[in-house]
Every structure is written in C-alpha cells, then in structure tokens.
Image 1 (cartoon, rainbow, N blue to C red):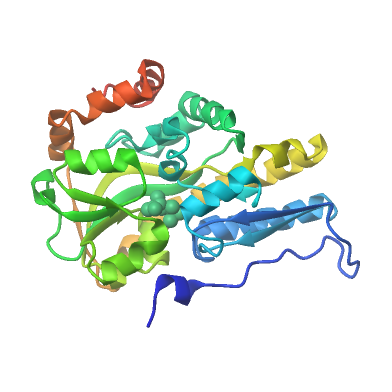
Image 2: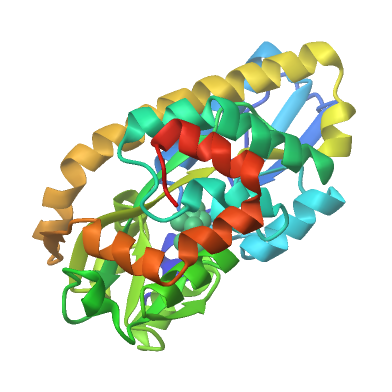
Length: 333
Ligand code: TF8
C-alpha cells in the first residue's frame, strides 16, 4: 500500500560539517521543517542554502532539514516554529494566514494575471505589508517569498470548465478561511484538510477534488488518484520562509546576514525552477493520465462577485491592504 507519507518519507537531510574531519559541534544547531517531498524544488534549493550557510559560517550554523511532514502536519509545524521547537518553517501563505490573516491577501481568487504582477506585488508593497504583520506574532519572514505556483483544480470525475461545474463539488482545500469562503462562493462543498492528508482523502473518496499547483500535483503523485485538471490559475500561492523570532534575534548580525543571503538567493533560484517546471509539467502529467483543459476566469469571477466574495474580503483585509493589492493587479471589487 502506497501512501504519500510512506512512499516519500526520507531520512532528514543532515548537513556535512563545514570542515571535513573536524567534528565540531555547531554553535547554532537549528531545525527546519516542511511538508514537501525531498524532490520538490523547495527542498532542493533549501538543501543548497543550508550547505552554503554551513560553509560560509565555518560550521557555526548548522541547519537540519526535516522534509515531508516528518515533524507533523502544517498546523503542528506552525506551533513548533512559534514555540521554538523548530527554527524555520515554510508554510504556504494560506497556511500561515491561520495565524496572520493578512497573509492570505495573495490568495484572493483570480487576482493575479501573471508572474510579473505576482512578484511586483510580493517583492513590493503587498509583501512588505504581510511581512510586517508576520513580525507582530514574533516570527521573522525572509524578504523573498518562494514560489508554490498558480493553483489548479483536479477532479476524479467530470472536468471543470466553468463555475457552473463546481456546484456541490466535494473539494479539499487547505486549512484556510479564505479558501473555504472562495469555494463556497463558487458553489462547491469545500472541506479543509491538512496537506499531509490529501492523497489518502482522494484515494478513499472522502473528497472528489483538490486544488494545488502542478509541481505539487507531480511530487505528491496526486495524478494517481485524480483524472482531470482544469488550468484555472484561481489562486497564486507562495511560501513564506519564516523563522522563530527569538531564535532569529539570537543570531549575531554577521550570521544573520549569511543566513538571510543564502535563503533569499535560494528562493530566487527556486522561483526559476518552478517557472521552468510549469513549462514542462503538463506534458509529464498528461503522460501519467491526467486530462487537461483550459478555463476562462470570467464565469468564476462573475460568480464570486455575485456571492459577495470580493466585498467580504476587502472588508476583512481592510482598505489599506486591499488598496495595495489593487495597486498591483487592478480593480477587483
Ligand atoms: C496545501 C498547501 C500546499 C503547500 C505545499 C504542499 O494545499 O497550500 O500547496 O503547503 O507546501 O495544503
């Protein structure tokens, strides 16, 4: 029996000491947890970053990576990074929004037309606004967001062409009030589940559909339990690379600089990886049996307007944040 947890579980990646042969305990022995298989670009680039950090700090900072939900699901890791049980975590914006509601702003449905708009907003004023809110709960968010991707909808049966096809659809969404509100607005029957439970929920037909970017559908093998994929681009989602605030402040400034430099650089490379993957993944996934169709955002946007989704979330995010978003993408509501 293959479940994503079992098939993809891997030993934690342990960083080699900066100077081989000299077994020296690190001055800062830190842990980083995430929810993704080791093959996802997030883990590949994070691994490069921790190696660079060990090298450039001469082994003073050692970071051990615990990928693939080894330390528990997102909700667990979020509390661990808050308590200091782990130092680093990379939640999707939707996930950290359970703690910092402002962080869901990039997930407003059908807001971004393309990556120019995404990075314009997230490397600019929208991202700065969110980072300031994250700092208020004593977490440090690194400057460069990492890319999860544009989210697409997959189903076990009938493909989704327009908003009308979503009526009553049992779809798994992340533990995210915005996702629930959006999919209810579209007429679906959304259920919140942690990412670690998605594969088996689809396999056992607890839900019939889910939505995630193509690289996630690939590495988590969701094509094994889904038939169709609508290229809806309904949400752009990224990861905030966050650190426990106390642990971050406890690092001397020169080490902070090395760590931030390595992580932000790795994030830029990871964005590029996802962009390249997006160009080739559809063919790969088609070969694995997933049937693709394009959709136009029009019927979805119209349905969301009618349901009052944009008006509601403008109210929840507040005029200031909403104004920053509209400044980057144009008028939404
Ligand atoms: C979800 C998340 C995921 C990410 C990714 C697996 O669907 O938003 O897209 O957490 O790391 O739960």
